[in-house]
Length: 322
Image (tube, rainbow, N blue to C red; front, side):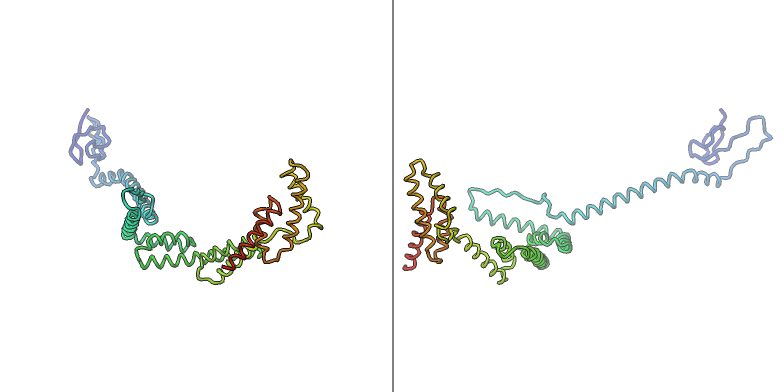
């Protein structure tokens, strides 16, 4: 195998090689021996250099493209991490479990825990104030007033003016929102449903303790509810005109003491009818007492209801003389 010198680096190159194995420059084939009539025309160095750059250019372009893609991925990662740290300042990793020591006063331990929590909240606020305030403002802007209030209230003991203002704003918007919902619900509740009205006005009175109207409504419906519960369930109609009431008394006496004979059953029925007639003649001022005794003692018969009412009426009169 015959050799020749590379025109670029001077390294030995085979006459059959297309390019230099040392520098990669393309090589011109040498003419066969004995044919001196074919002159060797060397390629100018500038052309060889241009050909070499053209051959290697696509590889450089691909490398640049890969670097650009990796840069984009890294940028997205940094953006996601920034958003995560902005809105997760109070994740579970910062939570602490406190254990009480039986040898130390419970109140001292509670005070120490509160002091530790304040210190942690203060450190958290100093470390990520921008993230905390941004999240609370975001929650308020999106109508999540209750969540925003809880976030801000966590730092209420630190006496931070900005967070106090956000806490007040969130609470005011939260209770106004709840007020609209509760008033809309009350429009569909009949006035005769005392318990349902009392429950909703209790919520309004809790949200707006300064509102006298809600307090009066709550007092009214609670009073009507107590009056309804204490109202006598005994009919004021003469028992002789109510055959179904007599049948109810007879059936109850038979089921309770029927095993002792008909005479005992008749005595039970007579006592209950006599007690019912007497209860129907009581003044309306004692109607609430009779109603309470009826609800508590009706399964034992009207005689027991009358005994309960008489006892309470006598006690009420005695209390009035104290």
